[in-house]
Amino acid sequence: MRLCYISRCYRDKDSAGNKAKTDYEQILASMQAKNLGLRQRIGTGKIATFLLNLAGIIKYALTLRRGDIVVLQYPVKKYFSLICSIATLRKAYTIAFVHDLGSCRRRKISIVTEIQRLNKATHVIAANTVMEQWLIDHGLTAKHSHLGFHDYLCPAQPQPQKHQAPWRLTYAGSLNMRKNAFMLEMSAINIPLCLYGWLGSYQGNHTDTTHINELGYTTPQQFITSAQGDFGLVWDGSSLTSCTGDWGEYLALNTPHKCSFYLRAHLPLIIWSGAAMAAEVQRRNIGICIDSLQQLPDILAAITAEQYATMRTNVAAIAHDIADGTHMRTAITKAISQLSGQ
Image (cartoon, rainbow, N blue to C red; front, top):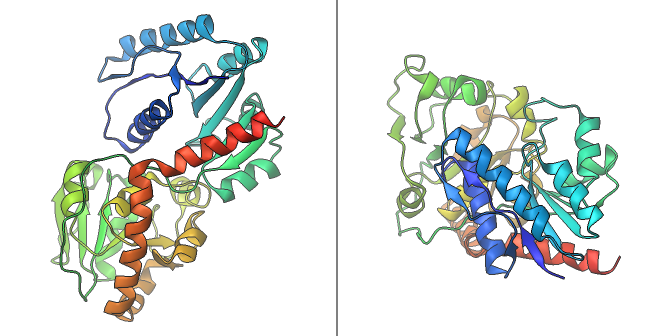
């Protein structure tokens, strides 16, 4: 019984989605998993990417053996059903790790179609417990489990910094009106904010304020080493009062890669109370869950230095596991155990 995966071509390596997928390929390789596709490539053109990924699927079809366990990072563009069908014919197994649900994030397919597609896998690893239950409620019949926080591989380590009240927020990511227009209203709550990322469609739309420090794009290594601020903000949508719209509502189901990015920089989280990961943040005492950003001035003012230090200690512990690939290794080991027992 071999543990396997199919490596792919990626347009870049530092965007959240591609960073997660390349990290998980690296973790699988460290578990002695065999790559049944072509070698991983970064930065290939669109046509070359299509042709090389197709060639990787053909290689997979030719080298797959009976009893193999193939880990797929879902969604797999175009080929997911084909890969699962080939595995079924060869009496092999497929584990689908769900990064995103197209029926909920971009809504390009129906929920019924997505569940039917996922049921072609032998085992499904949902991003978190909330997503796992949602899949079950909507008809998932494949064996299932969940991950939790994403792993984030990077050799960089946070350097000591002084953290004291008044507490500052940190927000990192691509900024655009479709995903995080709420940022245009942040001046209303008047909290020091360290803003990392390209302004994108914000350019010319936002109002300059003295409490927002625009730091521009920085590499993941630089961010982890020297991120300014005290709390990483996990919030999407256009409103300060709740996470709204397609992107905001999707927080109720998915595990943002951004959470792990902040945690690797040893930043406790501030996350919407309706988010799928809110209960985990609260359980581990690694941040604060809020209903509305408008609550932040009072909430942050009440946090003592001792409370913040405790959160930082807890964050450092989980950051070690995230940097080591512990979450993915544990999830894969559990899935293999379930498959072995069937």
